[in-house]
Image: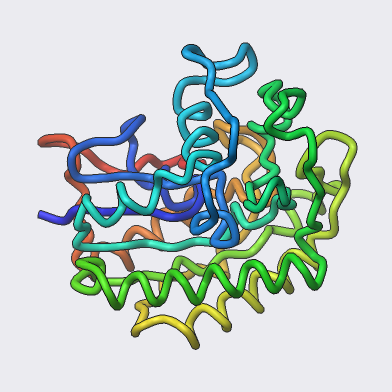
Length: 263
């Protein structure tokens, strides 16, 4: 039976229909390789209940990025398969008091940016030279971590993805990562290609799964129209490739199966 860890986005996580973590699947999201290995944010104290605009999982993912708890949890989990995708590597970064955090949508709407812990923050644009350098440092740290810990026994998988440029019927409008911050699909796809090439060069051998012929946005997607909410054929094709690598459908009990309309 496989034990799957994902460092990535919903394009990988929602191949499984269950919500939340299980004893055989954990999911690290709304972070960046540039942020994962940084120091915990000084002076940050999370609210006991999620802020009004966030669900419990969203809040937990945000707190994990700020308190830097994901790496210890990942190593302790001892996955048989570790899946990476870089779709969540679209957010800008924040440099704050000697650490780096991800300027995710969840952080933007949480209200935490108004707190004292963020008083001296400085934005690092994702597409800047500084953003590139921070990401590459994080990628090198991930490669070293895998070689030095029980993660070396896992099957490593790169889920190669790009932003779709059109839906089934029309080109996509200019997307926004955060409200009123439009971005270029072409620029982010070029960044993804660069990240993947650098990652493969740094890491131990990686299996690669991809379905470029099905990178089409789904107008009927349950999470809404987005450059990375694909048509159902995409998820079926990726699942077949994962299954061939020994990834199990069953992470929560008999009858579990991938969703036809995963986000």
